[in-house]
Image (tube, rainbow, N blue to C red; front, side, top):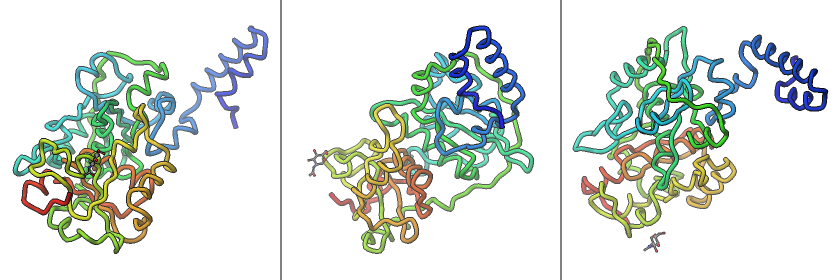
Length: 330
Ligand SMILES: *[C@@H]1O[C@H](CO)[C@@H](O)[C@H](O)[C@H]1NC(C)=O
């Protein structure tokens, strides 16, 4: 077993400078020889800037920057590909009846993923790390989970997609290298099929209202003032929420710096908002919001951070529900 590289500088500090130089050159050799550092084998749901900087060159991995083209042009993570998250983009289209933020056509998405170097064939299984911005309101933070959900729809399983915790600001706050150089992706073959298992439509949601006592919850990720009807967002025709829906404002899942709260805090938040009736093993949670952005944040937290496997996603959200004349509760 090689000594941990992290302790070498500490040892070096205790020795005369000549030895320190020798030690650090040894460390360099060890690093050159290492095929895949052990830490890089642990590809979590959320990765730290340190991990990403250390491991990106050791794995078949595409780092996707979801910020605007302008932000990317100023500075980005070396090797990262720009694919801004916007309502009409590789990640999203306008849906039937002009629904905002609907999933793209599967074939377009698959072709796009192949073109930016995401391989998915018997011999390749590229991992993806998503890099979002951070802002108030938390729309930039929601881009990471929304694109993760879009990649699940593309057929990429859990274990293939991670989010950089704290987004690009966390990278710069650790003074890691950034660049303006734009990499040229090497296209790969992307073969999969769409996964729609977690998507539910408006009729399905209508059949699940008032079932909280059976462990079936509709969870609304909008801010409290929107949920309770005192504020009306532009995309909804009527105020309020889906009857019997509970409220867990998605903005609360992030710390002010855009990193995710701990799983302990997230579970406490969930319990506070919907009590102890929600279970990982029975019943169901259907997530919803205004148009499907914040709901993706809830979907991510519930499925990837808290281990719920009975979560469904209502992409039409309040926009479709209110505009198609379904009852709104205040
Ligand atoms: C709705 O939520 C807002 C924001 O939290 C709050 O100030 C307001 O009192 C609430 N209104 C009702 C009717 O509950």
